[in-house]
Image (cartoon, rainbow, N blue to C red; front, side, top):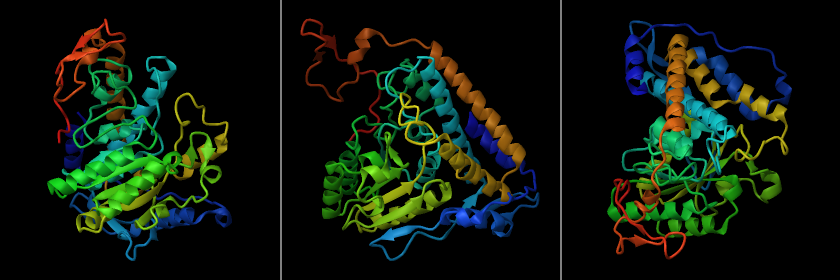
Amino acid sequence: MLSKFIRSVVQQGHANQYSAWSGARNTASLMWTDFWELSMRALAPFMTSSVRNSGTATEATFETRPYKLHKLETPPNSSTSCTRDEALTYYTQMQMIRRMESAASNLYKEKAIRGFCHLYSGQEAICVGIKGALRAQDSVITAYRDHGWAYVMGCSVTSIMAELTGRTQGMARGKGGSMHMYAKNFYGGNGIVGAQVPVGAGVALANKYLENNGINVSLYGDGAANQGQLFEAYNIAKLMNLPAVFICENNGYGMGTSVDRASASTNYYTRGDYVPGIWIDGMDVLSVKEAISYCIEHCTSGKGPLVLEVATYRYHGHSMSDPGTSYRTRDEIQEVRQTRDPIMLFKERILSADLVTADELKKIDGEVRKEVDEAVKIAKTDKEIAVQELAADVYSNPLEITIRGTTPYDPYTHQRLSKIINPH
């Protein structure tokens, strides 16, 4: 639905002049990232761009945020280009994820979603930026905060919302729920903390064995960063020079514990020791995208794995059962929303560069709201699967078709109902 709308927006080409943000702030108390942001906003009118006759730019060049390096001599590019089409796509994707997560929050409070539910609000620039750089042969595996990832990797909004409520139109027919979503080259959605990282190293090994020139991106949180299995994955990946990118999404808190209280070293991008690393500002979608392009070049040239730390922030608690305010203040959350929100920052940049108009973005907001609202209606009213379908699609090639139920006297018969997404 939205892809057709974006194409129509691209064809319109209405010009609009956007005034850059300004206002008085006490710069003495600002961190270096805040200085960078203020500088970029001031310089926005001077950023290079290609302009059509109508006055709307077709492409613009932006400065990336500074990177920090570990055992690397050359950083990712200090500037990156963004086309009008890409600007519209990235904005739409981030808004869609934000809107989906807000809807999921409401559904959970209504008890339409049961079990665990971990929201991605505030971290949208990571999955959108990474996906913007990936190629058809590249793959992703992540933890349980996976709704946004499922969307950018190809799952429809309806299939995601219906999966959350356990309905048949869910991407796993309602059997996986919040933590288990899959798509082509997307291996989940994994509920065991840190367990996806060794699996990601295995997918990278498959890439090398099949000689498909693909890389695998494994994502985990700062709360999982101290797990021993991560270091085992680093070791085997470097030993075999696998095309693997290990990414710590550092949102500042592992459940309710701040990184400073949980980790003796909070420089997660250096944790690979003998594996090179990069620190990235995860609130800037273009900086994330440029860094992943760098990683693809590094891994596919035979140099082996990389460990990335992407600094970000989550607005909700660890999960919906966590109010998120017992270990941090509401003022802290509000300050991030007002000064570092990834959607707000990207919106300001593309408007200042004249890549889009305010009216176009407003129209996208309306289309996003409409699509999510329609998906929520389906998620509430669609039917659930039959009990016998619980044993469907358990195995790709079952040797026995009888599957035990809750007791040996309640067997199920294995069924093949869905197409295998990622066969090897």
